[in-house]
Amino acid sequence: MNPFNLLSKSFQNGVHPQHLKAQTQNLPIQRVPFGTKFVMPLNQHIGVPCKPVVEKNQRVRRGELIATPGGFVSSSLHSPVTGRVSEIGEFRAYDGNFAQAIEIEADPYASQQAEVGDPIDWSSMSAEDFVKAVQDAGIVGMGGAAFPAHVKFSIPDGANIRYLLINGAECEPFLTNDHRVMLEQPEALLRGAEIVRQKLDAEEVVIGVELNKPDAIEMLNDHIKPGDPVRVVGLEAKYPQGAEKMIISTIFGREVPAGQLPRDVEVNVSNVSTIVAIADYFDLGRPLIERIVTVSGPGVSYPANLIVPLGTPVRETLRFCGGLKDETKEVIMGGPMMGRPIASLDAPVVKGCSGILAFTEDLVQTNREYPCIRCGRCLEACPYFLNPARLARLSRARMFEEMEDYSLMDCVECGCCSYACPSSIPIVQLIRTGKDQLRNSKAKQK
Image (cartoon, rainbow, N blue to C red):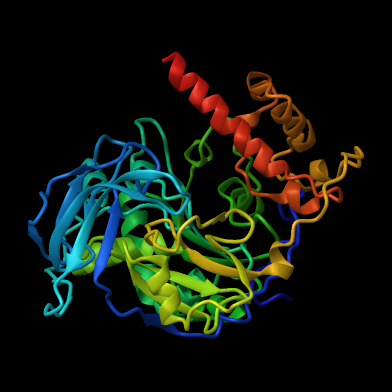
């Protein structure tokens, strides 16, 4: 009998990359010392960028509001440090593009202690007030997508949420930040889960954790009291087990149809770190001003799981870990499957930054690309049952509108296709290019 309630079924397709988590899975969370300058991009979330409410040379306190939402699908921004607004303008982001941001120069004499207020009475809030509070706290999905959390909690009339599914799969290789959160902050996780469960009027909380984290499963089970509407489910270690549709399929056997959302099958999905951030806000009055980041990879001198103030330059975070080794060839933000290379180490850590990974030449070496041999391995790997090879060919032919006819927008860019391709074709990059071109074309038409 499996002590962790392993389901005999899993989602179809997917791949099994090496876990590569040994460097950091047993390292407790540490705090990075505060630096001197912090850059807070206004577009740290999916949706409309937020709007500054501060001016140049204005003094701000740690946790103070510095930008308000630009629309419903937008989120607030708060100062990660006590200091002075030194600039409001365009700064280079990790992807090389320039975006509007607020630069704050830290006060060297400030303690940088976030003010802890009285607990916020969430129980008496209406559903609308709760959604607004989460938006005001600046909380977004912290698994990497950075989708504003309050949008997920805004349930339309007639919809019913039966299960709050907390995603603790963390299926990306190298990353262990969620693993450490479950081990070190189980009370906050369960507290946040109960807050959200009650506000969504859900029957049960289900926490999905891959079986390569048995200590996290045991820790959570030890903190669940008899009678609590919470259960932990062990999941097969498989990629992309943490994708919303995949984890729903694995646990509940329900398929979220194309073009629909988890709420259409009575499920609401949130990442473990997002739920902890909600608990911190309602219990301590602390908005989202920092996050836990895994710094790992063979190019890092001292891997670590770190609490990093938002806006901290990647360079400063790496310096705390002993800097990069001479043989480092590439640094990426996020996991190796879905993360993207960092164009500049001066780019800031943002809300969606789950990891900073430094790779040596043996991990970034580009194999020679060969013609597609029609082997079908990308189809067997794709968990969304798309035809990645065809989408890649259409992208190369610049037939971007035709790509939409083959369910282009259902692709979540998980990278399974590129991982499985024996010809080393950059399939997911070609699909990503097609998506970008199609979005730009539609924007110009509007």
